[in-house]
Amino acid sequence: MSVVTRFAPSPTGFLHIGGARTALFNWLFARHHGGKFLLRIEDTDRARSTEEAVAAILNGLRWLELDWDGDEVSQFSCIDQHVKAANRLLEEGGAYRCYCSQEELAEMREAAKKEKRPLRYDGRWRDRDPTEAPAGISPVIRFKAPQTGETVINDLVQGEVTVANTQLDDMILLRADGTPTYMLAVVVDDHDMGVTHVIRGDDHLTNAFRQTQLYKAMGWDIPEFAHIPLIHGADGAKLSKRHGALGVEAYREMGFLPEALCNYLVRLGWSHGDDEIFSREQAVEWFDLDGVGKAAARFDMDKLTNLNGNYIRKAEDGRLSGLIIPILEEKTGTALDEATRGRILRGIPGLKERAKTILELAENAAFYAFTRPLPLSEKAAKILDTKTRERLKRLHRLFEQLSAWSTANLEETVRKFAEEEGLKLGMVAQPLRAALSGSTTSPGIFEVMEVLGREETLGRINDVTETTE
Image 1 (tube, rainbow, N blue to C red):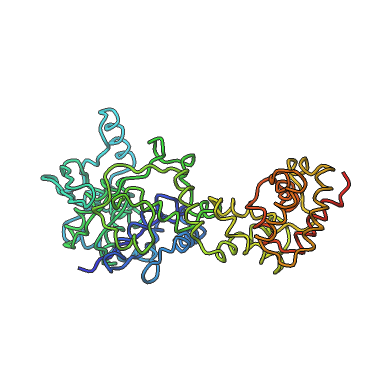
Image 2 (spheres, rainbow, N blue to C red):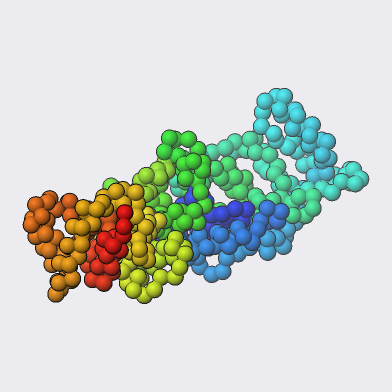
């Protein structure tokens, strides 16, 4: 059997983190088995579905590099098939028209509330003759669910799960206006798309029983179900915005790399031994549903951030430079010239060792992008007193005389100068850092000087030494 999975989001909002993990699990399972990963946009709720949400979902999946096979399918475009399936059940006796009024339904709800039991339709139109239908009521079409026995699901994550059929009522297939319900649409769509494995959150487990009954009534093959535990916050509570239940685009804006986010998400509820960090290729090779646990996974922003730092350290310098340049251009309010772009690229190796997000990397690289004279932080300005500026003037003259501008030569020059001045190295290096970066923190100062180059370094020192306090 060729594996076919699907991701079926509703376009009523952005691609949130839980949905992204569901898509990732489906994608990995399909790729691991050499099958297909399909995308269906469940947009039958026309009042709440928006084109902006569809675009956000597609962009989020593309950013995570979760490519789907073929074109995305609009559930709304398949309504004729949904209606056809309901009418077939109606003709075959597997469904019936229900003419209950709103008042009758309200009475059922009130009775269930008083008796403290779940609301279930009482089947009053199940076997009645349609000729008894009251005037002025457009009927819904209900599924004639089995009333005895059990419905069993052999879930690939949860194991064997059983429900007594008396616990399930006759669900609505078509509303009074002729539009299909979710329960009908999802079964018809999954069948028509050839889906073999339905991998989704375990909040859909109860739906699977009704859907299984519907598959049997239609005489269709039932797909394998795999209901994965939901994601909770680090405190064990249901995931909310305070835990990190944000749209995927928010993580992009916060400076996370897609490969880091995917690596983190796949480890939420799935494991491969003690492996924590692995490539996309390894994930495809290793992933299968037997590694998915039954317990809810806990989302930890600190762990994600640390993992992102690991991926930043491994990322290509050119790629990182390309990611932070737009941020720096927005920060400085000007387009960066080629010389400045070159400085940033040369500075990436020293910067990425300390950064955990792209925003942090951009912040740390900002001093390479600033035009002269540099803005000085309060701490940097305090270091650069009159005595220190005079000392930097003398050091400036030594730098001018250097024949080769290299980290080694610069370090040797500064160390020799400090020794001759009777100072510890830090008492020279820290004012240099303040003058060249405008801050008291930066990568190694000799590395910074080499990245800046002779002209920019001398110019920045000169800006500081020529400034009157």
